[in-house]
Image 1: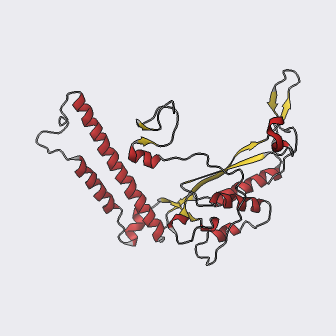
Image 2 (image 1 turned 60 degrees about the vertical axis):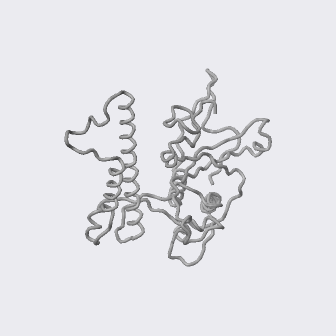
Image 3 (image 1 turned 90 degrees about the vertical axis):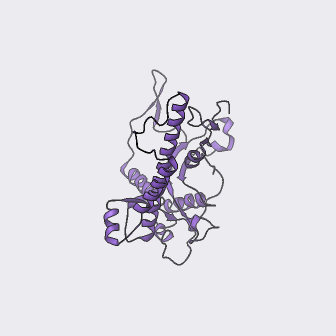
Length: 285
C-alpha cells in the first residue's frame, strides 16, 4: 500500500496570521494517481456489477424472470395494502367504502386483484422460444452474481450460499492517531486505512479473504490475474485467497429493508420519523 510520511500531514499547514489550519492546494503526482486508479480497478473486479443480460445464459434469464415476478408480486401487495388503508380511512370518516365503484359494476376483491396480478406476472415472465426471449429481454440488464467459495474455508462451489452479491469495496477513511491517550497506536506515527465492504450477506471469512487478496495484489505478492481464476466457474480446482488477521474487523451496520416491509416493523434502530409504529422506533431506545 502507499507509504505516508510520518509526523505532520504535508497537506495541512498552519496559517501564521490567524492560527487556523488550512488545506494546501496540492495535487498528487501522476504516478500516485495511476497507482490509486489501479487500486480502484482491483476493488471493482472483486465486486459484482450490473451487466447486459445474455439470453443464452439460462441462469441469468431465470434470475431475471424471478426478479420481475417478485417485483410485480410486491407491487400487487402494496396496491392491496393501499386499498385497505383507503377503505379504513373512509370507514373512519363515515363515508361509504363502495362509493368509488360505478353503478352496476361489481367491485373486485383485493384477494382476487392480488391473485390476478400474480398470475399475470407468471404468464408474462414465462420463457417461450428463443426469438421471443430475445425480443422480451432486449436492452435488459441483470445483476451478475459471483461465487465466493474461494474466499471462505467453509463453503463449496455448488452451494447456493456461495453465489453472492458484493456491492461495494471502497476506501472509507484514513485515521491518524496521536496523543498520549492513544498509547501504542501512535508509536510508529503511521496512519490506519479503513476499507469498507457492502453486500447482501458475507460468508465466514469472506471479508478477511477479500482484504488479504487485495493487499497481496497491491504489494506485488500475487499477480492481478488471479482474480479471473478465482471467479472462474469452469476452473476445476480450488484457489483459496489469503486471509488477513481478524484484528480490526467489525460489522458496521445491517439493513433489513425487505423484512421491514413484510413485517411492518422497524428492525434497524435509527433516529427520525419511522414509517412503522412497531419495532425499534422509540426515541428513548
